[in-house]
Length: 205
Image (tube, rainbow, N blue to C red; front, side, top):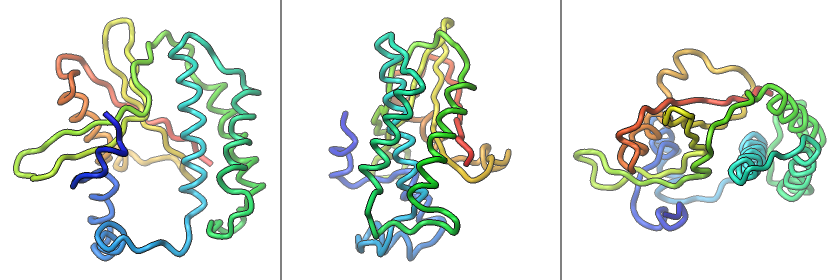
């Protein structure tokens, strides 16, 4: 199952539903009219690069390897340079620029690497695309789960990676629609007989 293929047909996603709940006009302009954005927020591009580096880290773990911290730094620097260097359509937050976010990314990934538990979880999915249906909704819900692991007891651990300027509150975690969809997707796509734990790894800038 490929996420880009799933996007070619009518669908809903956590992000599109979130847009609609936040602002109906935002949903119309972006999802219906597909108007181009005047700029891209730095946080969006930065988060995408962090996400890609973590995917590479767990891809190595899946094959029995472990990336060194230097390799993680090199990967981030290369991807951030490819993504953001010289672009004038990225709107940086006050006090931020290309170089500052380069340093932020290295610091975040260093902290993540050193605080990561030394577990024996088996990686069974990275960027795992999904599609499932809910009653009375004519189109499927689609998306991709960042990371799926399994511990020695057979419990499934589903992790979503986020970058944020602050820690998430208990209410934000309890009402996280994306994690709810991840659980529903896992149960609908072959993991319904497993215990499923949901985890948010939030890299706080």
